[in-house]
Length: 258
Image (cartoon, rainbow, N blue to C red):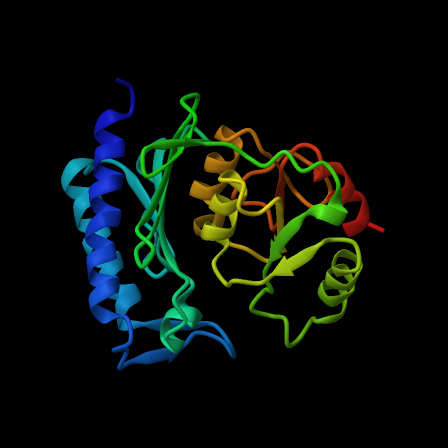
């Protein structure tokens, strides 16, 4: 089956990462500030090392783009996009909502995505054209067709202290229309929850490729719609994202752009 070795590699990588994160959760000793509110811990580095070793052992010719290590010199049309710990601030504070995210991009197309939430043992995955799954059970987006009955999620960029106004204006427009809005702190899980119908929509700006690459494919394969905030074709290298079921996606775009 196509991508079988790649999927096995991603699965074993996130499972090993999950063991490390469960061991270190609640025992963080070293927190480094990359920015005012952008943190990194020893868990990020230990998990990243384990994942990169596994990928390099199985696919030594592939390029890797990872949050802490950055991007290797591009040697291949295949790039693994890795977030060893999505939700580092949550993890550092002992707030139990974080994930490991791994995607494979081949010739500029995301073909595989795996996201693992280790504390809740939620393993999300998708392969292009083969649907989306949570713990091996097929998942689909919700069928809620109006915003007033929708539960949405969002996040705030790391430069929110310097540029709060437009972000908060958009938040205000949405919060008076939706049934509820959550701000959990892990874009990877937010996207997977849209895919599984636990959330009806999600929007955010200022994200990096490793935040959304796997979750984007999982939403797409679950029947969701993913674009930029301007309604344009989405890629993990774009700076804004709106992911939702197809019934409320257009309304979300309209409100966010008013």
